[in-house]
Length: 157
Image (cartoon, rainbow, N blue to C red; front, side, top):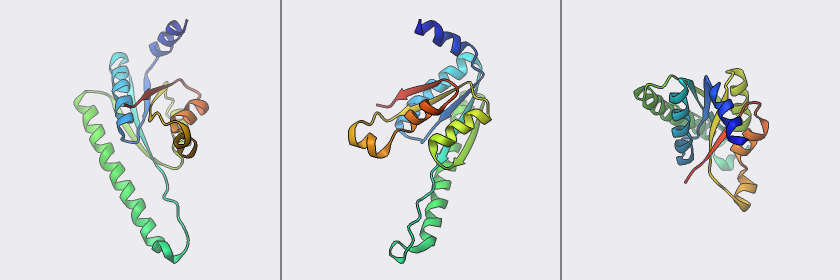
């Protein structure tokens, strides 16, 4: 039953949103997203969310300037990584678009999927358990619970 339902979902795929944090887990998920995009001649939308650097008021931590520099550095790193990812997709002849967003990753991923009318989301999971999962949470888990379209999670190694 599950296989039949999955193949019906996969058959209508025209736009795939791949959420990436540029980690190894995301790279594995990207491989699956590329394969799906190529198999279905679908567009791949690569999304990265830059989380705001928490600002702590007070002189002890260097003031607002250090947070501004951290934000700028995070943006430059994300732009560079996304540029490399898009070059890779271009070489593979995958129709692709990139989005760099700011905010809470799970919220922005789900909003982008709705706004861009994605047929499915492909996201990597780091496979955290126990206290690590409790404190750090699971972006993939939150995306699964909030998304209105199917979500494929790919576990990193």
